Image 1: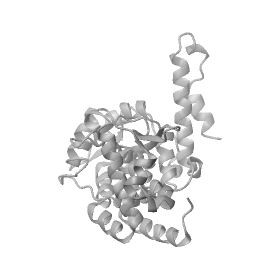
Image 2 (image 1 turned 90 degrees about the horizontal axis):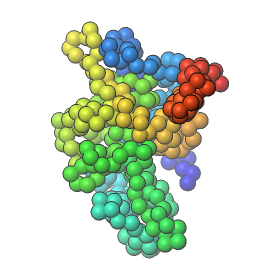
Image 3 (image 1 turned 45 degrees about the horizontal axis):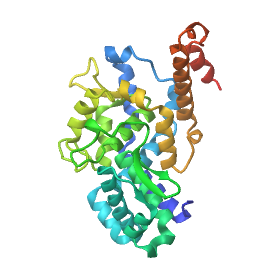
Image 4 (image 1 turned 120 degrees about the vertical axis):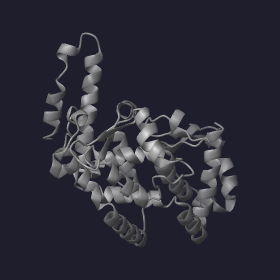
Length: 319
């Protein structure tokens, strides 16, 4: 649904405010290149040139933090009081999350009953608001299970698991925070300093050492749980005192999702399409091509016929 000009103005103002607080994100790639750890140096460098990596990054990061910040307790309550549609969206989302927790489907009739049928005309807008928040905070999306019965369920986005350490004690997934971290790392040139990660998370109300109702103690979840599960890599940068650390995508993140999937979510948040962000889109295309080449190589007898990954990367880089 198109936004009004007034809404766009408010959104731009909010993004500019957040952008000022998240400018330090650009430092991460430069710092890591100057003082890489041995393990970082062994990995592949970012596919895109430096001039391309940063183009549009701050606007995208600001937009993500803009949406996430709505879910701090105080802002959610205040927003709901001002806007009855936000209040209905909050109530309906709680209903959906409870159904997800107990693994039950629900129908459109159930949803209309929750928000009151007099809001039926606003139902598409309520669902739109819920969808953005479900993706960013919980890493979930609404899927129709059966068109005939109009039944729905919540499923994990990006192909990421919603079980194990990615499911909190409340039964709600922590995938949204992981998706956000992967997005920030991707937008920041595939490597981001720990300092800059926390600067970003503080903007959206997530602080190290402060227990979060969904994610628990964030530092332990990010630097231990996600690293142990191989969703993130966490490296100390050599030659710097006091110690500094950087984050990269882990092997499991590469296996379960793709840069293109992350970019699709970012594009949706920004009311655009992946190609609206040319530099990130180019890198995502290279990643897709390399994955396809690896799949072909993995088939017995195809190894000698498959194009070399460097060939694909080189040729796509100049499209």
